[in-house]
Amino acid sequence: MDKSESPEPRSLHDVYAEVKERAAIWETPQFTLADVSLVTRATPKAIEHFINPARDLVRLRGSHVNPGSGKRRLFTGVQVVMIKAAFVVSSLGFPQRWSPTLTQLIERRTDLMSMMNAETEEQVLITYPAEEGNDWIFTIWGSSNLERPQIPTGFIFLEMDRLILETKKQLEAIVSGVEPPSFRPPEPPKFENPYSPKVNFFKAWSKDELGRWVYVGLNHEETLILLKSQDSHLEGDELVIDFNPAEEFYDPELRRLRVELRKKHEQARAEVLAAFYRQPDTS
Image (cartoon, rainbow, N blue to C red; front, side, top):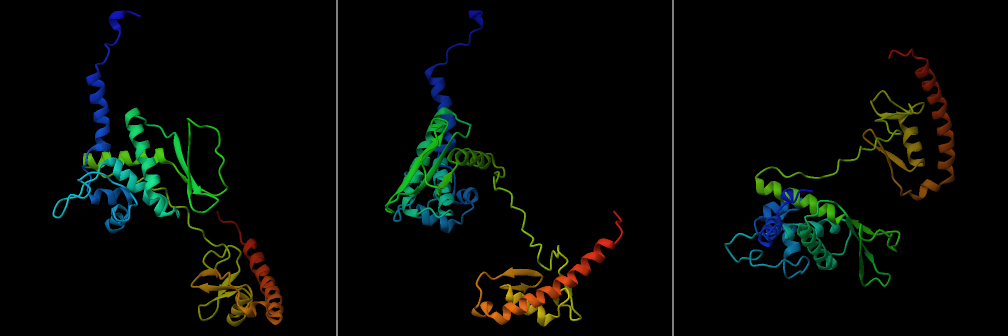
């Protein structure tokens, strides 16, 4: 390689300036309580609960956090991600009294990622209660520790690198004056009960002359008896399983009626299905 084409060595001043610029999003007090609420999706009142020094849940340093009466409270990016982490794990049942330990781990990891200019998700935080019940265990797992940790079957799994990087993108958007990305996972498809009158996948329902849902082949009174014998009831056009059978659920007479009404219903449903499948296919 031609020495004339070799890049000039960077000065220590240039390297320091680059690191300082990268760290600005994390170290500069510039985010308001409204910004924190937007990023965490928590109300200002809920945020105040976590950052109140008297509760000692998220330890935030700096006069900008508690500037005094009449002055606007500001947060650094690191403090925002600490608060966000506390909210995420709290929603999963993590004891709030251990929030200082967890958020300090998040703070150190954020500082390290900023210094290294890391843009990949490499580490996760696993936490769970100790067997004695008076402590919580925190385990870091990732590229620097590929061996699977010895953990119980149940635990809280926090993708802390992903949390940090997503929060960084949200904060950068706020600084730029644009709408921050939400990173909210899509809602799972709503479960539609195939046994309900609403779906009626099994052709088990019809309406009587009063517009009430009834099992095919049964009248309204018989439908109520069969529903009761199956520990269920209707709410509009939804079938609801009670999972809390009353004492009469175990009554022998009710069980006998269940068999009788079920047989009557299934015979009528078989006729409905036969008529349905005899219909010509118009698709």
